[in-house]
Image 1 (cartoon, one colour):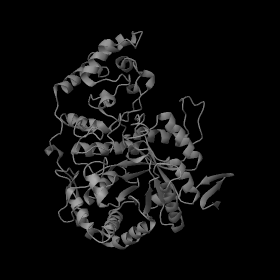
Image 2: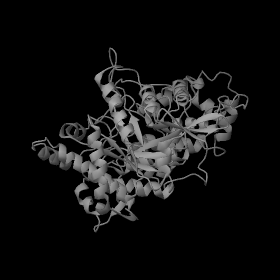
Image 3: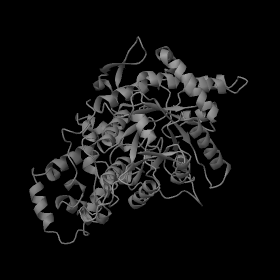
Image 4: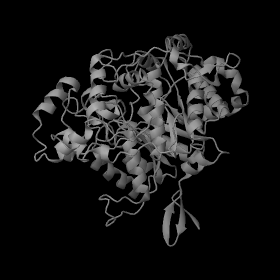
Length: 533
């Protein structure tokens, strides 16, 4: 029996009320083109920004064309009203919230606690992402956390949906939650290494239970079609939502100068925005029409929905984009030429179709692309050491295992620590991931400590946090492994979170005695969905 209570739909099952997830139903219905609209809560609790967000939610709920309202989680690395609290208020209005759920500000226990709170509030839809590196807060920059990455959070959510067994004993299994968790991917990367590692991480998210995918914002139609084709290749049924950003000149200039990590606006597009702002309405009609055209080509390409975002957007503008986009969608191919915004020397996974301006089904020859990072003596030495000492049941591995099985105190490891600090900048986590990332340390060489793939904030191969100073560790890892035709290793295994019980203990001891994640890391099974490249 279906009940309606305060605008929300419930299903009465065996005496219990079960909240019907209208966003999930819309997204999984092939006849429905799902629409989400992004709200930014802002800093404060009872400020104008929060009241504006609630007013917008009320308008969207009354109109009925929006399937979910997405709520950002401290975007830009700055504090704001918690997305979960605003989501609970929005749900009462009769419209589904889609809460952004980032990893940057909380450890795994806090993440689990927040998920329980969301579950208790019947907030089912979450968009899991790494999150922007924290930049400002009370009396200075806050300490970043990044205890779990987005793939690991997806794993946690999947376990909670099955009924979390926190101790793996079967003695205490919590009631299953009903989260509909999505992941994010950015196809708008200029280099082969940046792009392929994005897709490798995407495959891990799908394998860990992602229920849908949302793209990063961008404006290159060929890139939108690329990510659609790639995702359909290894996971044909997962819904994909295209990110549609209403772009004014001011924000475009910030993105063009890489001040909003992961957001790409080319010089060509910025010049168009500059010209459009000379109009009497400062370019508003032009940017709304651009957004409507993006709606049209995304629907025509086969996306399952669009995510509408932008600064200070009114609901009347959202309605215009939907109405005009629907009207234009029948002739969407005629719009593609207006969204040709390649990055300088930008890499595309597929060859270009000269007739349509989109992609052929044939991948480019990646052997023709020069790696961005050369193999040095340190990597060659690490490969040799691994082959001699760390390859299971080969060479000197059995001898080393017998030795460490006799070690009494794993906290005495001065020589190991010295060698690893010199070679890798070791941070003493004790749960070493060198074997997973081409002998590069994610604790010392990645500010976000990413173990399953890159975040979305890199730009032209540079780290989001240290642009122009430090290359992204995953760009380096891809280049190092490609030199040996081993780059696909980066998508073959899911790497679990660091076990902090092992902090400041010998990683070699933990490896040889089966205490670290290498003992339980799942291998790539035939059933896993992988990018075939």
